[in-house]
Every structure is written in structure tokens, then in C-alpha cells.
Length: 382
Image 1 (tube, rainbow, N blue to C red):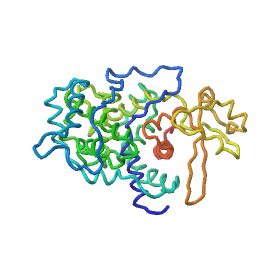
Image 2: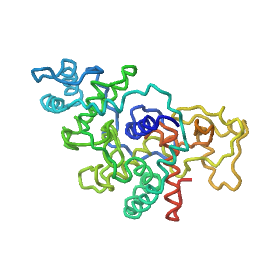
Image 3: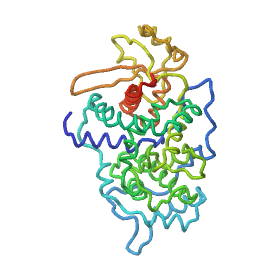
Image 4: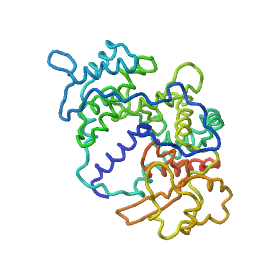
């Protein structure tokens, strides 16, 4: 893999956007209904006002007034989200263009060669395995309660927080208001206007959370893409999926595993996790497995279809409940080494891809989960 800096940036971008959940698709059907979502679990209407002007480094004019398009945005946010206009304007006037955020989000002009081997080594590493085992032991009761309520294995919850922030060691030091405003109103990528709109919607979510006193928009910090806390939830994901795990009336994803752990589990369950299924089906794929890869983040292939193409259950496989669900063949490509690995993902693999749309990410979470469980001598996700 060449240009290591660009590779690192691409990886960091994938992590920074974890938990965004901005592209919503229908989760795989489950015979057991997931726990009821919170009252805020619906996606708020997209804000139409506002625009991105790449290269602009200020959101206000010389007189200290918001740019006309941003003022129109403020008025629509106030109307749609029920936030007093003066508060919306106060938050927006506090936002500052962040050149580092813009630089990190600048599209690469070179082809980044995909390397599953390199990516996996970065996240399924001794530091995360040891720290994950410690995190599991320290939060055993919370993990057990969340696993019982949502049907998500403890190992998966631990692994996601490990991949995202190494258990709180790397939660990001960017003012979230600056990151979202920069990417919403001065996004360096003019070719994808839907991305800047997504960030403006996340900014509206942040302002609404501030108005509801669930966080302070003026001082909360996170990743350079605006993701917050131990699980790196975007503001919209906080609105839809965050859980008050300890019942203290306050959700603290920044520092409190008692809230972060069930929030991760709730996110996965609401996005298609099926209790009792492995992440990967124990399947032997045919030599032409690459032709079975459909892509996307929703499984769409039935087991009968895979059998017809030559797939077989691995000898000794005990759990075959996954045969009743849609599946997807996953490609894990290493271009520099000319290697190709194929696995069969169940709905639970694809639930993880809602957290981050990368197959590399979801497979790394599963592999880290198994490695941490093995370290403790406990059952893993497969």
C-alpha cells in the first residue's frame, strides 16, 4: 500500500463517520421484534436551507451577521426543530471554520489500494485485545444486562467501543460545532452535495440536543467529522439510539460506559441485529465466490441460492439458524498482496455495517470481538 498518510486518513475518516447512520435501509426481518425505540427514534426532516461554499472560511459577514444562507438555515432549524431562533443563532455564531477538518475531509486525488491485511492488523491488535478484556471485566454487569435486553453479545459491544476509541482513549478533540459547521457550510468536496446536507442535518440535531439540554453544543468535543463519545455517535444517532443505561436521567456517552454500552447494543438491534445468530455463517464457499458478492449493507441472498452455486455448511457447524435469513457474501480484498478472502455475512454482519458502511470495519469488529473473547476464555460472536 502506497502513500501511508492517505491510507491513514481514509481509515480515520471511516472511523470518524462511525455511528452516523445517515443512510437508512430496511433491516433484515427477525422473528423476534427488537425493543421499542425511544420517542426520538424517528429521523427528523432534512433541512433544506443553507448551502456549502468550499473555500469559504467564515460563516458571518464583516458586521457579525450570519451569512444569508446560514440565517435562512437558522430560521428553518428553529421552525422544524422547535428551537428558539435566538438560541439557534447563538450556536451558529459561535461556530468557527476549522481548516484541519476541511483538510482531513479533502477528497484524495489518488487511488487508495485496499488492504484487508493492513486494516485488520491496525484494529485487531494486542493493545485493543488486552484493553478490551479489561474493559469487559470492569463492566461485566452492564454488558450482561445489555446483552440480555438487546440480544447483542458482550464481545461485539466491547469490540465496537475498542475499534472506535480504544475504550475512551481517543474520542477526538475537535469542537463538534466547528466540525459540523465546516463540513456543512464549507465542505471541501463539491462533487457530493448530499454530504454537506447530511452534515447540516447533523448540525441541526446537535442544536436540538442542546436545546433539550442533553449536551452543550458550545463545548462538546469529538472527531473531525462530529462523532461523539466512547461509541462515536453522531448527534442524530444520539437522538435516535442513545440509552440512559443507569437510569440517572442523563445520557453521558463521553465518559460513562453504563450509557455507552447499551447505546451501542440498541443501535445494532434497531438496525437489524438478530439475537442468536453468528456474525458470519459457517459456510464453505465455491471457488467463484467473488461472483456472489452483491455489495451494499443489506443482505439479499438466500441460503438456497448459495447452495445452488455450490456453497456448503462447514462440517461440525452446530448453529444453522442463519439458514432462515438473507445472507451476503463479503469480499475482503488486499490489493497490494493480491489476496482475496470471502466470508458469508448474516444479518448481524450487515447490522454492523450500518454503524460503519465498510466491510473491512465490520469484519474487524467481529474478529476483534472473537479475539477478546478468546483472551478471556469466553464465547465469541461466531
